Image (tube, rainbow, N blue to C red; front, side, top):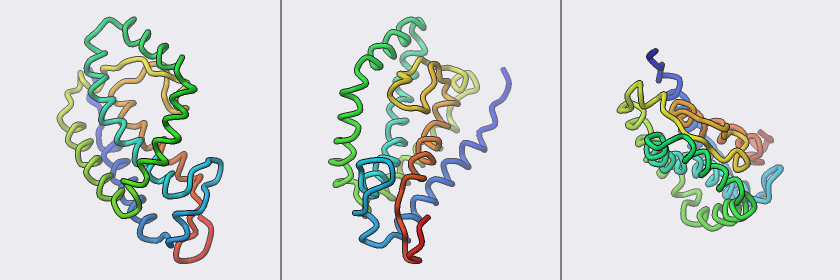
Length: 180
């Protein structure tokens, strides 16, 4: 089994952590309440949703460990079941981010991401090469960055893809007054 270079994943985690803190530090109060581009969320709600992508990965790591030990048809069936519930998922995803963004608001989401990133660094370092190659099937209709089958390596890359996609939808002008 080939050794997986974990340094790009560690770098992604740190790049996003630093970027979120830059955004939080540079945004004006009015920026947080402005509607984002291409979503119904405000910038503050979208920022939480971006952090939430990392929180979700913590839970998916547990599911992946479980499903990888079962026959592949079980995780494939579970992914299909989840895909069948795409419409309610999107409703919960939207409204959940609206509500949770009040708890993990601009004053708290940076610290939350710091804790989650630290946890993901530890999980990445403790995973064996065999663990990194393990995987499961995913509901591809839930997120454009989920592929039909994802390994643990793929899962560690996922939240940065999700973050970067939504990063481009922010309408934060910041202290300079210029659009990003």
